Image (cartoon, rainbow, N blue to C red):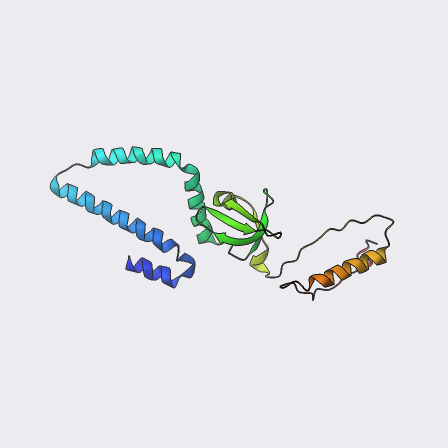
Length: 188
């Protein structure tokens, strides 16, 4: 148990896993002690183990979904496809946002409008994840703007440039991106 504690302290990513490892070690040690003591006394544990096996199967079938989410959470913690602070999009569900917490049962995403989306870990583990924060800490959002055909292109362009300039006042938004006018891309 001390080795598990030391490993958990030396590895911050596995700190929460140390508690489960300690409990598993304790249960395994207690089981081994019970088997050795019963053998020394001459009591057969075969009927008890058979009953526990059947009961465990019934319980496992009853809590299949929570167990799936739990083991998916272990997989996500070990594999680390996402980390708190990453901006992700989950294909299929359309959920996207900043990973706030990655728990054993679910993952919480903070959406751009301030809401929280709770995604079961089984859904996250099975889905296709686009992680925008893993390779590039800068997040670029493309925003489609539709205007009528009879709009004044120069006025639309200057209005959009003014709005983009106003967005740089928001904390965390950088304004050093290259400006590409509409005409240069053949859209005007």
